[in-house]
Amino acid sequence: MTKTTRARVRRFEVQLDGPKVGSGEIDFDSLVEFGEHFQDAIRRLVNVLQGKQAVLPGHPTTAATEAASFRLVGIKKGSTILQLKATSSDLWPGAADMAVVELGRRVHNPKASVDTGIVAALEEARSSLGPAGRFRVKSHGMKTMVIDHRTVERLRARAVAQARTESVARVISGWLHMADLQPSEFIIRAPSGVEWRCTFSPSMKASVLALLDHVVVAAGHGTQSGRMGQLEIDTITEAPSVYQQTLDGGSERLAPPDLPTTTRLRLQHRAGPEITREDVDQLLRSIEARESPTS
Image (cartoon, rainbow, N blue to C red; front, side, top):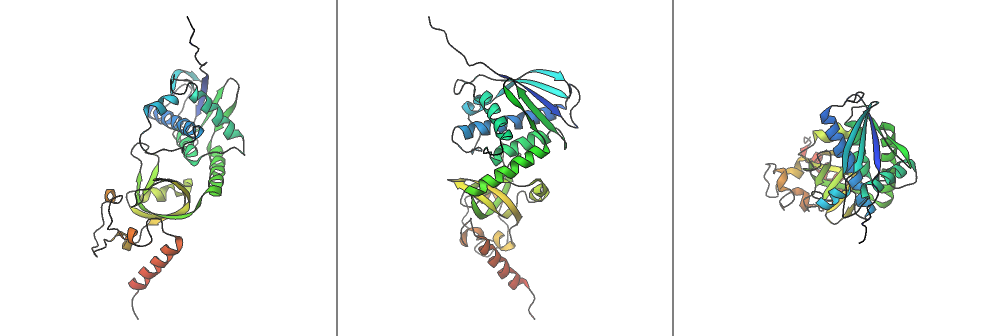
């Protein structure tokens, strides 16, 4: 009779600090939000380790979810310390354990690659504990990983710099909305059907929120693979009125959900949904010339 060997399950301690955390106490909503975003960061890294994009379209598959999930096995005092262990996965035993250790390595190594989607999930996890929130992850054999505001900013700068070496300057137009299944993610859906997952500096968040459910023009640097794109936004504005008009001359604005399939938007008849910065400048100049009073 042969013995089945199982991978040894590593345990992690995650120490939470912030305005919403006490000694052995935490707001329940904050705990749920933290857990969701922390697992998102780990799942995205698992995707990367499998040679995929960090953020994939649609709902994560059951297999992908199981491969990077954790079970809360205890809470201790000292701020609030969560004791976690990975759940078992037949698809990839030890994936979550390995991903946490690998994440720690990438956080500490200034030359290691890091994806903007992973950084965004870490920031959401951190900010769920309050404006000055932070957390530490430690386990046997790994260097303690500290995620605070300064660490996130450092990681974001590195991720953007690395992404720009592979990306090109782009101006994207389409409907700006929040992902149904990942409410912390912002997406620009172009008329072509390409979904551009957007990242941006914290100082831009209020501007982006104000433009939700609007047709926008966003400039930045990004990469595209099939119908998925990643865009680091430098500037974003509501599309000029000409973008909102129908080709038959009507001025009624189309409902945002119509954008992926409609062929009647001005957006689509100019230079395509992925227009250049020069196209936008020229279009704005022509609008200003038409709207300025004649002498």
